Amino acid sequence: MSEKKKHYGMVIDVRRCIGCHACTATCKIENDVPTNYYRSWVVEGDKGEYPNVSRVKLPTLCNHCEDAPCEQVCPVKATYHDENGTVLVDPERCIGCRYCVAACPYDARYLNPETGIADKCTFCVHRVEYGLEPACVSTCVGHARVFGDLNDPNSEVSRLLREHNAQTLRKDLGTKPSVYYIGLDEELATVNYNQLKKGGDR
Amino acid sequence: MVTPLYEMSHPIPFGPMVIADFFLVALSAGLLYISLLGSVFGLNKYESLAKPTAIMALATVLAGPVALLLDLGHPLRFLNLYLHFNVTSMMSWGTYILTIYIILLLVYTLLLDKIVKFGRVIGIMTGVFALALGSYTGLLLVEATGRFMWNSALIPVLFIFTGFLAAWGLVAMASIWFPKIVKIKEDFVQTSRTFISGLLIGQIVLISLYLIGLGMNGDAGMAAFKHLFTERQVMFVWVQLVGATLLPLILVTVVKNKHAVAFAGLLSFLGVLALRFNIVLAGQEIPQTGNLLNQLSGHVFDWVVFGLAFAAAIILITVLPIIFNLFEKRIVKIEQHKISNENLNM
Image (cartoon, rainbow over all chains, first blue to last red; front, top):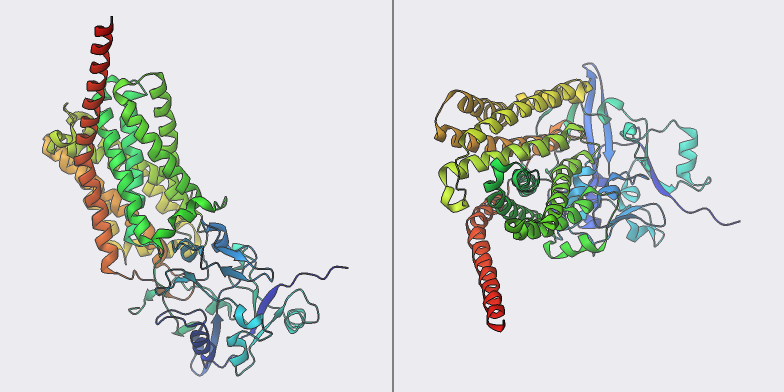
């Protein structure tokens, strides 16, 4: 019987996230992410009213969607799924049109000002192919991020998905993300349209 | 309730250069339709407009993509657009639509003076591609399904329709203020008045329908609706709706002066440009994640190219009639030479 193809994914147990932002920092260092741009970041907020307040977090990165809008819109087929289901950008083919950046519903892409090509999380493919974990996973002090093969029933990610009611972001769009969340705070995960405000200068 | 403490805004990917392209190519499609009125649809009244508008269509469609090209992270890799076609990408389709349209438009313009059966067929084909060109810029936005302000079937219709309005605005301005430059010999004041007023009313209807649809689209739609009237109030309410839709409508319907029509044309033209700004930018300002509005990076280079695209269009509008004139004179000379040679041989 042929072995089932790998499908890498990530499970983030937000209950374990302590909001240290080490994943954000290590990702920038590991992948040489330019100033003011991020491949992975953590959104934080306070939930409730004093004295019943708790801190909620949302680690964010490319969702490596199975039906990726960025792949659909790329006019030169520079965005593709590799054999492990990871969404990557071919740096030799990308023309830097930003269409994928506009189409990504997770705001996970940006045009790298130094290379002129679309950039985003690669699940640290350069580490994974040598048997290492993505930098954000290996650095996470709370072990909130778990990376592995979603098609392998014995992997830790599969076990976590079996044992917990994991959720994905913007499920309504039908993009089939490969990043799952345990203990996701729905309110933090969705835009509060009544609280929109201007951001700072980039 | 969650009070955000740490979140980030994201740079807006489609800026002024993309907007310049969207506007100029839709304007070209609109100009071509004006040209087709006399040459293909057989409306004799508009025959003298056929050539000048075809040349203006060529000028604007050549200037627009230059801005888009300079917006690329790797402009020299634009050939990849032809080499790696992606059937699911509107931008991929747009590349081919634009290229074929430019070729057809050039042939159509060259054949216009001797519009024979073949020329008419080319005209119809160019018209079909103009429709595709006008709608593709809208469909390109629709395809980004995560951005609900763009995800409306009315966007492509609005873009085609307003392209036609901007084209009439340009014709009104050109025929009244610069008739010699654009070689429009007849007076189109009354025609421009009729078209501009009708198209402005049509634009009001379409924008109203779009806003109603937006407002009915849950919290997100209502937020976008509010965003247009608050954060983008200056550009949307005062520039686009009042200054560039209601004011020109009053000018063309109340003031009986040809300069008022030309000015209304200018305002309508700018209004269509403002509409592109509002839809393209507002669609990206509303965040998809987090609660911070996204912001335009505001690089000077973007605005310089934006200005250069319009400057290039103006230069081409001025220069192309001269080039076409020289080309025609050359053809006439060759034909005369042929006839005289034939006569000598007889």
